[in-house]
Length: 439
Ligand SMILES: CC(=O)N[C@H]1[C@@H](OP(=O)(O)OP(=O)(O)OC[C@H]2O[C@@H](n3ccc(=O)[nH]c3=O)[C@H](O)[C@@H]2O)O[C@H](CO)[C@@H](O)[C@@H]1O
Ligand SMILES: C=C(OP(=O)(O)O)C(=O)O
Image (cartoon, helix red, strand yellow):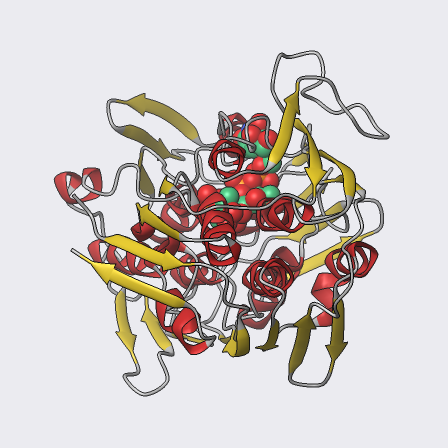
C-alpha cells in the first residue's frame, strides 16, 4: 500500500516554482551519451523517476553515471559500455518508454540491444511498430522474446529513406539516434518537430552529427563514423510549466514559473489567454495568474507541435470545468486520454465523453470507437473525493482539482507523479497548499 496524500482544498496557490530540464528530453539526452567516444556532461537535470530509471539502465550497460551533488549535473562516460545482465534488464520492464530508444545507440556501442517491455502512461495502446519498422529499414534484425525484444545488425546499420505514417516523437528520436552513426544518408519524412526533438538535434550536433531540418517535416542526417561527448544544458520542461499554469488558474492563484520559456509554450499561452487566464513573461520565467472574473469556455484540439500539446490537455480540462459555458476538447494524439475525467465527474464536474471527432479536423480515432472527445460544462463546484491516480498528467489534474475543491481529498498512487514532476510536494507546500502525506 503506497502513501496517502490528504489535500485540503480551497487555497489559491501563490508563490514561485522552478522548472528544470524537460522529462521528454533529459532521459533521451542520457541515452545519446552512449553514442560518444568520451564522457558527456548534461546540465539542468531534474530529480525525477525517469532519470533514475535511465541512470540504472545505463549503469547496467557499463556507462559510468556520476551526479554532481551540488548541481545535479550528470557526467556520463560510455567508454566501458557492455552487454547488461539479462535478469537485471528484465527488472526494468514496464518502468518507462525510454528503453526503446536504446536500440540504435546500443547497437553502435556494443553491437546488440535487449529492450525490456515498455511502461509509460496508459493513455492508449502505444504500439512500437514505427520504431521497429525504421530499425528494420536501417538493417536491424528484430527478435521478439518473452519480456522484451532483442535487436542486432549483423550487416551494420545503413542510412535509409524513411517516412512515418504519423509524426511520432519517439520514432523520430529513434531515427535520429540511429542515423547519426549509420553508414550513409538518412532522409526522414513525416518527422515530429517538438522542441525536445530540436534540443536533441542540437545536442547531437555538438557531438559531431550532421543533421539538417528541412521544411515540411523532413529531416536529413549524414551518418558519421564517430561522435564525441557533449556538454549540454537541457531545455526547460514546458509540460511542467503548463501544469503549474493550469494550477494557478484552477485555484484562482498566482504562480511565477521560473525557467518557463515562452517560445516553447506559444500554443498554450494563446489558449490560456482565451480562457481568461493572465500571464506576464520576463527573461527568467512566466507569471501565471487568475485575474478575477469568469473564465471563458473554448473549443480545443490537441495536436503535434506546433499545435496544442496533448500533455497540456489533462490539467487544462480542470480549468475548463470552471469556465462559464460549454467547452469541447478533441484529443487527436492518444485514443484513450480522458479516463482521468471519471474522478473529476465524481468531484462534481460535468464532462461527457464522445466517440465522434468533435473538432475541425477528423482524426485517426473517429471511426474506431474511442472516447476521445469531451464536452465540459461549467462552472462546476468541485468537492473533495477519494482518488487513485491513473497516470502522470491525469494525476496532476486530480491534484489541482482537489486543491480547488471544497473539503478534503484522499489521494493514492502519488508515486506516479514523481516520474515527471520534480519534488512536487515541496513545490505544492511552497505555494501554500494544505497537504499531508501519511503512510
Ligand atoms: C517520453 C516522451 O517523450 N513522451 C512523450 C512522447 O511520447 P511518445 O514518443 O511515446 O509519443 P508518440 O509521438 O510516439 O505517439 C504519438 C502517436 O503515435 C502513435 N504511435 C507511436 C509510435 C509507434 O510506433 N506507433 C504508433 O502508432 C501513438 O500510439 C500515439 O497515438 O510524445 C508524446 C506526444 O507529444 C507525449 O505525449 C509524451 O509525453
Ligand atoms: C505521456 C507522457 O509521458 P510518457 O510518454 O513518458 O508516458 C507525459 O509526459 O504526459
